[in-house]
Image 1 (cartoon, rainbow, N blue to C red):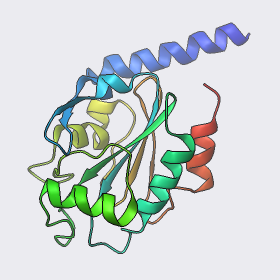
Image 2 (image 1 turned 30 degrees about the vertical axis):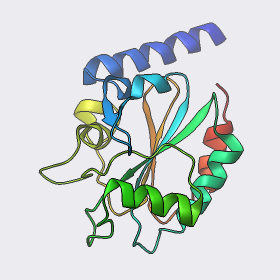
Image 3 (image 1 turned 180 degrees about the vertical axis):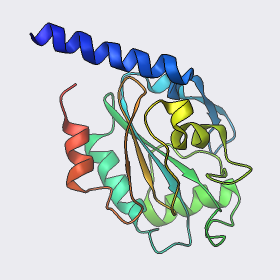
Length: 181
C-alpha cells in the first residue's frame, strides 16, 4: 500500500510538471553581484523564495529570515531573496546599496538576487512562474506585498504561499522545513 501511495504521489507530481511545461529549476536568475544563479543548483533542497524591500514595515523580517537560514540552511534548505520596488517604491536602492543594507543592518548571509519586478507588465520570469498555475501547475496567486514567501519543495514544485505579514519563523514554515523528505 505504501509503495502504491508513493507511486500515485510521484505520478501526480510528474503530471503537474508535464502540464505546466516548466520547472522552478528551468530558470536562471541574477545574483545581487550580477552573476548568473541557475536555480537548478538548488535541486534536492526546500527553498523559501521571498520578495524583499529595505524601506517597508516588514523589513525587520530580514532578521528572522537570517535566523531561519542559520538554523536550517545548508544541504536541505535555503532562502533566496529578491529585492523588488513594486510596492510604494520601498526598495529604491541599487543592487550594491541593497547588498550593503542587508549585510550591515541584518547580517544577511542567505543568497540575495538582483532587484526585479514581482508583478505587473515587467514581472520577472521566475515570479511569473511562481504566480501562474499555467506555469507552476499548482496555483494562481498574486504577490500582495513585500516579504511574501513561496515554499518550493525539494523536487521544484510549489508547495504553498505564505502572506507577507506572517513571520518566517511561523509554525507553518518551520514544520514544512522539518517535514519528511
